[in-house]
Structure formats: structure tokens, C-alpha cells
Length: 243
Image (cartoon, rainbow, N blue to C red; front, side, top):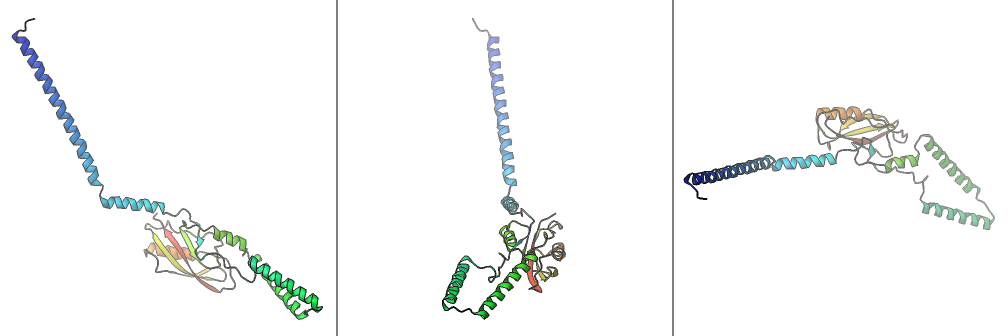
């Protein structure tokens, strides 16, 4: 088939149109790539190192937030009376001494009435003391069980030797807009009532709302009675969370 001039013109026009379409398509793809790169660069620039550090601190703070509001005693385990609660070794030694004493008395054929009377008096006093302690509700096993359940993730803690709250300590930690640790010095009387409360210098936020509420709630706290201590000094620590 012999191509005429108009055939060549049609072929050339088709080639030019195809090339034009390809060029336009490439330009369009290039503009999309530049736009995506632009947005990516903007996103990277918007996240500054300070903001990243702030986000990291916020994540750590969330992990360290108190998981309970049940108070625990920082003063440690209940201090037992060593005369009333002996170790196994002490009991065995005492029993061995008693057996030796009994053997010597049987060998001599004599009894020391005065000594036996004294021992009976001591035993009676110890029994009476155990009975009084139990009647006052200071059961050693219960107190040790309370202290063994210390929860370091609590928002409230107190430091008061041989004392425990008769009810859950009042919780003011969501009463203010600010957060912080407030430590309150307390004075407790023999009846377990907090008769004095002042702010401790170890507090890390002295905001008026925090300190006022901490003192007010500390004065509402009640502990077990202890007739052996007319007044006792301790502390209550509140970890306030913003409301």
C-alpha cells in the first residue's frame, strides 16, 4: 500500500499526541511525589525534640500513677514485745532451762517456794497482758497481715510506729487542679485522734489548695488507740492528682 501525504500527516500527529500525553502524565506523577515529600517534611518538622521528651515524660508519669488509694505504713513492721513473743530458739532455750531447774530441784529434794511464787506471778502478768492486748483489738497476726500487704503504688501513705488506721484514711487527692506530693506532720494522741497537723518541708508543691486540703483531711484521720503513748509524732503523705 502506498502511503499518501495525508497518511504521513496522520501518523505524525498521532505520535505528537502520544508524546504530549506521556509528558503530561510524567509531570503529574512528579508533582504528586513532591507534594508527598512536602507533607512528610512538614510532619517531621512539627515534632520537636522538646515535644518528644514531653511525650516520654507523660508516658512515664502514666506508668507511675498510683494504682490504689489504700494507705500503707512506711514505719515498717509492727514492733512486737520481746517479753511476750519469743523466737523459736528462745523458747527452746527457756524450756531446756526449765527442765534443768526441775531436775536439780528433784535431786536436791527441796523446792524454792519464793522462786516458784515469783515465776507464777510473772506468768500471770504475761497472760493478763496478752488478754488485754487481744481485747483492745491489737491482734498481732492481723496487724502483721496488714503490713505485709504494703502497696508502694498507693496515693496515700503514713509513717506512725505501732499504729494503723481504724478506717480508710480520707482521700483529698482529686480536690485541686494542680498535682504534687504534700507531706503533713501529725501529732496523734492516745485515743488515735490527730490533734495537730502542719506541712512538712519535703513537700514538692506548696500550692494553697493542696496544703489546705491535706491538713484538713489529715485532721480527719483516725488510728488505733495506744495508751502507752499519750502523744506520738508521725507523717501522712498525699500524692495529689489534678482533677
